[in-house]
Image (cartoon, helix red, strand yellow):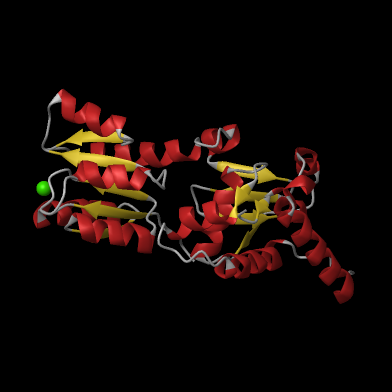
Length: 263
Ligand code: CA
């Protein structure tokens, strides 16, 4: 499966929205469109895009209010695209957390360059040098390729669903850090997602099954034991010291990607 980065275009002028979306779709992204602020906020929380392109002049609310609302729960990259060219407008948007500001009219190449840059910057948020440098994260025999949206174990592509890839990508970005269920659910499924972590548990179990393939010589009972042990360790932040990262076994990946239940 090819996973394409989802970009939400928030723009009330249909011709501009259509133009931007066509450019994005023709360049390997999956564009979605919202014409009002209300629709945009609803789509952000239901579709969890990878990036937002935001026009400031919307019919029902100012784009800056969308930015303010979004920044209260998410670090999702936002590129503002606006006819407002005054310096104070740019400063206000950047101070509220916009990643970039593009003044209309703009060229296709410049738009694509700003999108690429904003997406690249989000990979450096966790301070992971390898992700920032190469777009990949490696632990033992497991490689997360953020550019190709692939996870490989021993050089072989692991077939993950979109949700599964997004979870692994997020965990890789914050490897070695303790993440709460609440944080992961909000990052992946938005602020309106149910607090029930069952969906995350199911996805995690599937990911583990796919990337932690044990050697064929192992008996089924030992597989079950290993899986249960890995889960208990993952659920206990105190059992996730950084030294585990030195293991060459992919299974260790899940063990140091610590998930702490929400207190
Ligand atoms: Ca507008």
